[in-house]
Image 1 (tube, rainbow, N blue to C red):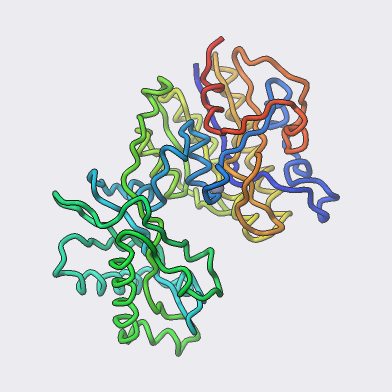
Image 2: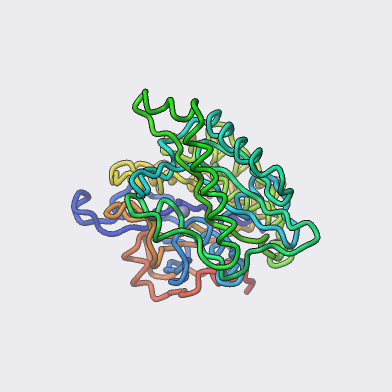
Length: 402
Ligand SMILES: [Zn+2]
């Protein structure tokens, strides 16, 4: 049996006035997703527990069958895994943004999309300043997105479950003083942030950005801290060798931690200009050696963040025509299969941000009985009668026999 999960990231939404009071899924021409709904069962699922922030890390963990309340230990450990950084049992990974704070307020959580080279230079300054303490290890990443590791060596880390930090993208234009790290080890994090203020203020290359009307990085912002999550390998839980196709680091990280292959596709951008057809072809190719393939497409989420309803509809239609259609056709030809379409979380065009709440799913294939639902959208899914309040249970259903 072959299994495929297609994730149109953040595609679930509300009815839009600009789309004639339809949701993007209702407005989009998605005959292949509708065919899955018609041939199989439709329902709704909640992938993001109320107490957790809505994002792809939490949502996809649920979608892959792992309760995020039990397994999610923070965002940074997943990003470390994506970069192939191994964490010891007592090590911590911490996200290290380069940010611009002005008049005590978070002006830019990206330091004006700081270029890679300057970002790496500033992260290098931080590493130099910490060279007396062998626990801290900075890892330059892409632009403003960097990582800080606390290598515990044989000892204990200063952090604990009560360590609390705030994502900088959640406090744009707000006073940072109210959102500094709290709890165990917070003083260490604050001390590093303070150190960066002084170092970055005196760095000429950084400050020269002002003369070009660009934002300099005024400091680092530390958040998303956590230990390595103890994820049972997917093959042990569900008995299938798997691979994920994605352009997003977080998803690569979760995939690696689950023991999946990560398939890189040329032209996959994680943006609305991604090469959809290349992803569809890669999925079919990967099915020849793997029993379960996850195809994740970020474009629907990106269009939502931009508040662009038309682009969101287009992205859905491309996912339908270039991925769901050809993959379903291939699956039918090769024998027993199951196909599931489900996003990780809703992303509302209205708020341009991730939201909590139900997302629609449709699955069809061997031994899955057809219900009355004939289209794939939020409204039909909410009326189908099949509701999973714990999204991580959907995988059990998808892989269940008989
Ligand atoms: Zn997402």
